[in-house]
Length: 240
Image (cartoon, rainbow, N blue to C red; front, top):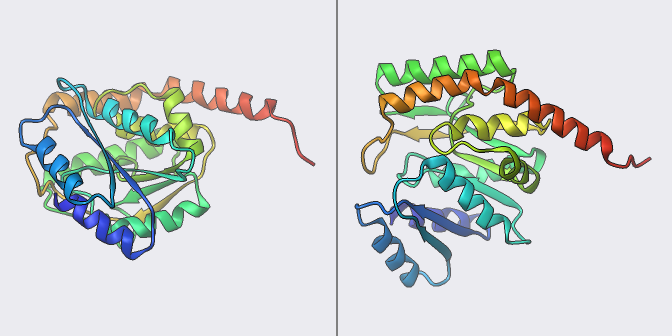
């Protein structure tokens, strides 16, 4: 498992303690056996592997992983990333550094130092257009709203567990807009996105259409979450 090897090397180099949670929807590519073997060979690394029956969706997989991670009272930061090496472990230490000053760190392909390798013209257009629309509709103030490579603190994860219900690729949208609706600070950290070095893309035309619909359709829920978080904040005792 190249991803796990690179994670271990990178985080050990920076003196970071960590636990890895892998969610697998019973994929036929041998992922389960590979992860289990790696865990046996690397007993100094804590790896929790969860296999689910059937394809239940990216969003539900990430949410399950976050719920599991939140059970550890000592966990300070929570990282979401793709397991196909599209997201480089080497970009993570800088993201964690930025996490000390924000509730969410967005791994960004579109800030200085960030870039995309291996996308065609149409994929670039889809991504850029979606990000422009999200910025206009929700005033996020960030350039990359759709990458799942992120670092959250506990408050942000608790908000996601409370409000998120996206089961599939729409998760990328909800999981950045919910913290923003709650008034949490989001900062961007540059990443190099490498187009699926392992396996084939699972994003279908239907997924893309649902994704676009969700960008627009989430507006009402965004406003509801914003109101709910404001009411919670106003009910907290003020410290003078």
